[in-house]
Length: 466
Ligand SMILES: Cc1ncc(COP(=O)(O)O)c(C=O)c1O
Ligand SMILES: N[C@@H](CCOP(=O)(O)O)C(=O)O
Image 1 (cartoon, rainbow, N blue to C red):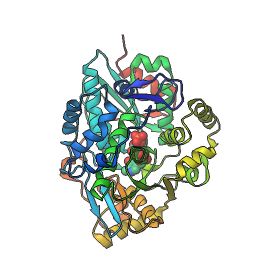
Image 2: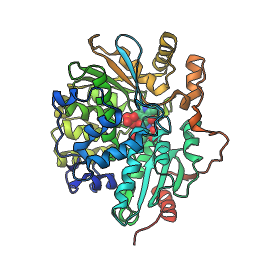
Image 3: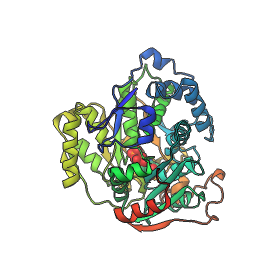
């Protein structure tokens, strides 16, 4: 399998190189040259398989040429062996049409673990084949950071620098990052938003001297391997609910457009997905883009769903490329315009390409609260605020009642205890496997959100090549 960049001029790479590279050298994001396609029989044959076996079947075409099926199975067994339930991503029924897909049974209690536990092992495997060292630079609004740190802490040949917006993640999220004491882990709280952090990370990649001197790599969903691992749970859930005989809809609380793009990939591979509902909070750039073609960056507003407080959604570029006809040169031009003016209109081809599968909704604080109460009072389910944004959008969607709607439950409610308590009156306890998070000492460095400050810090603490 070869991968090409959305901006058309970076070299095509195999899976191993694409995983280590993270971002394209032209600033674009990598995608498979062509989508693998599953027949109805191949999808039907997933019924009854374990999560690990499903993962092996779904991901095998993407890793071809870099990993044997046995190697992939071994990595998946290790990665998903750290989840607290055998099903890894269990389904919970709420009523005749609505389901939750619980994605938070991994070590750091968010859906990011599903991909990052595997990515940490992929890095280790690929680095064992070469004499090289990786410097991971990442941006987090709370969950990617803790999941990535858990996945790579203490690993040889890797340093990780994780930027989070100071004061804009929950206490649990921050402590999950800053109490991990390993010499290769560096937490940085920037004086800015998640968007500022993500822009700084991309700027580091786009500086060829800096990027190759420190062999930069990515753990954010700009890294293709992240999305690949997330495609699996769409298949796993849909088959359990009757695919390929039955269509399924998914509602996805969305920020950086990674999770919902994985659903798009599943659909491109042949999974019968009726609709993907993109649920945003009031930081609604994606809702405006999908409903009106207006992709213009607003100011980030802090909400009770901090992980979705994002106004520039990296993976949207992948959709614009694929749904818009895969014209890398034209997209590079369009993205340059967006980077200069912070605004762009989707082309007709991009809008039409997205319209068949995607719908969107903007959910405010009242909608989120009502969804948390409905799940709790109606079915005894305590859900986190991000999941509630997805559920509110699912309940407002106009979809045939015979089609199941699966809302992705992206975080454990205990990560956002204050917001859950405000909405439902109940305060979820942190699972025992998290340990004594509030007794451990924190370590992080506060820095201004400038390229000079961040690169200076990375250069001081990372291992340079040569
Ligand atoms: C709990 C939670 N829900 C939803 C999202 C949004 O997912 P994505 O950025 O893949 O759209 C995030 C962050 O990514 C998150 O941490
Ligand atoms: N919500 C994320 C933001 C980063 O998104 P990613 O999926 O691109 O890593 C977070 O919690 O950090």
